[in-house]
Length: 281
DNA sequence: ATGTCAATACAATATTGA
Image (cartoon, rainbow, N blue to C red; front, side):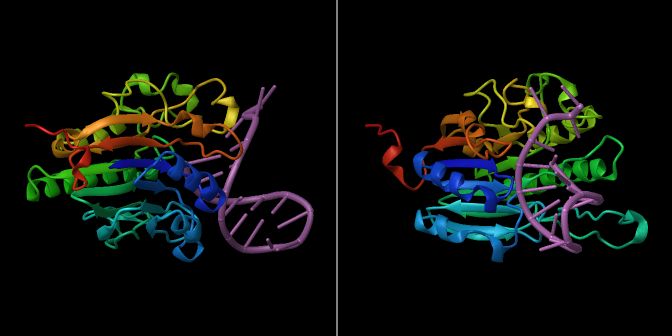
């Protein structure tokens, strides 16, 4: 089974490129982020014509997550347990919960529990959005730890735009982020590390040790290769053991109307479609 | 020169977000 993640930066603008890539790259399941639309606005037809079913969560023109799959999806979950909310100007001391944004959708394909996740940007080190980002990451780690406790040995994949560059090599120069050095601050890296403490590992890095997944549209970042590695597939041990290959699809940053992010994919063996499982006599 | 892009409200530009 080939699974992938891609921040598409508007599916209405990008559906042609996305479906073409799904078919050409022979992808079974794609987690998308920043679809930037409601369910009524989502271009379902090109996906269905290519043989993909889509589940999505979109509230307005911001954020939005989806999963497209040509294998059956079950147990669709909108948002994760404990996911924090956010609203500009919301007073956290008001006693009222801030509304949830469209940043998480889960589905099960074969025996793999998959999530499409769009972690808050943070905006600035002192911005209220940064605290939201840190709380979002910690709550995600807590929910993942709960799932792994309830499903020992289970295959869990967190796929998405985490908006954190976990190592220095994942961002060549902090000035790539205008103004403030978000994405690389100790607080953000510590919050990201709680996912590793929950038992999840980056399953792409061992096979693709270098390279970026995002280049800002501004300031010729792509031609200069001044990008960041912020899109990941994080797996439980039960998933990581089944990873046979991984790729970062840098070519997708080229050509007409690219997203500012590129797809990241991994191949899994040992799923229900066992014709790719090594035979042992 | 932030060497940009997308959605919306609105009706040619401004705002928001990334």
